[in-house]
Amino acid sequence: MHYWTAEIERADALLYGRVTYEMMESAWRKPATGSWPDWMAEWDIPFAEAIDRAKKYVVSSTLSEVDWNAELVRGEVGPAVRRLKEQPGEGLLVGGVALPSALADLGLIDEYEFVVQPVLAGHGPTLLAGLRERIQLEPVDRREFRSGAVAQRYRPMRATA
Image (cartoon, rainbow, N blue to C red; front, side, top):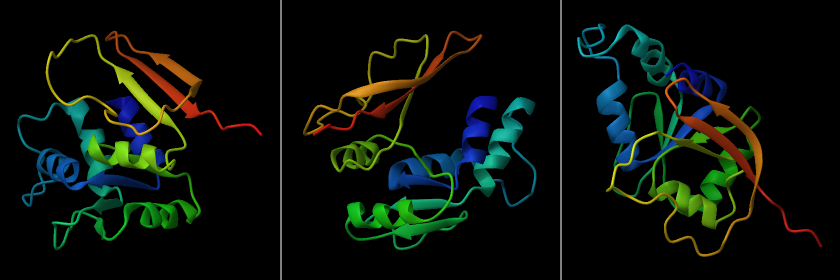
């Protein structure tokens, strides 16, 4: 949680699709009471506070409005994300399953970060399934955690002429 808290705080904004936005909001939005729920461990709170206050962009053609420090991104995702990337700052942190795949196909991801957990789920969506083309990656960073999880960061290799 410390790792992801720092990543969220480093980003200028979070970029989610509708499903991820709604899932994260249901878990991490501060309740109207102003108190975090009882299920939340003390070490969850810094992450919850970071994501709660973070600027968010939500790519959706079905939502009519968003709140929770969020702005709706409409229209073609490529031009909209290019405009967001042109803004000054550290960058966007993208989460989810479908949106990262679409952005990868458009060549709009500057870095990939994969966190491998020591758990075999056996079901669920496959990350980046259905990419139109193979994307060759070069390693940038690797970090191992006491839990056995490993965070690996890569950049797409650019074609040389």
